[in-house]
Image (cartoon, rainbow, N blue to C red; front, side):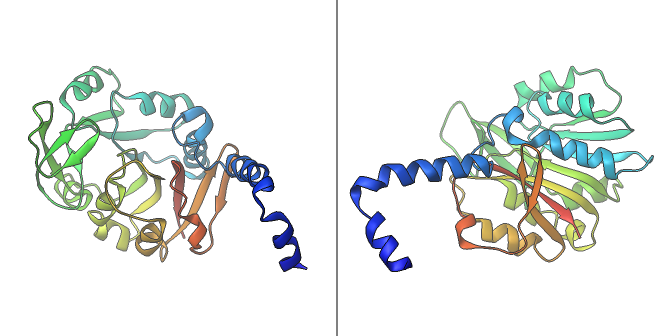
Length: 243
């Protein structure tokens, strides 16, 4: 029966119809909705943190903070005490970020990655070297080193918006992840970078200690194990929750 149905519908005349079904299904799954906060479901992560946190001050790493847009969203939702380390390497954006007058915000003019070194920022891309006159040299460190240097024992939420640099940041947080010192990790996956990586890579790094969930407009959906059709290169937000 399956062979007969496939034989009937795998004809040119039906292709546009089934492509429409695929597009509709992706929207229902919230795949490809990662560009805008209103549709990405990012607010659900802050709501989750608000629900599971107690009265202690939570520690948040906002990596790729730009001028503090996400910080404003966080403050509008989160109801308890927080310390937000906002990492932004680009000088002009960091200058604007530093103008925010809030005791809970700590602007940090660094990029995070898997090494401690100097790199270059070209547009939103971190690159090893450049001949582009518009690029700027930036300082890169790792989460493990920054936490060690600043006596940060835990991170309640690691939120990344770094144009495909997420895996390098996670590799630079190897000890914090291994020791179970990061509770929630929000990341994007999609065709946003020249970096070559896959959804399988995230499962390899996080799958043992975290449940990876696709963020929806209303909540989140656990991806219990890796499946090859998760490799959809349309920008989508995910949350990894410590088991």
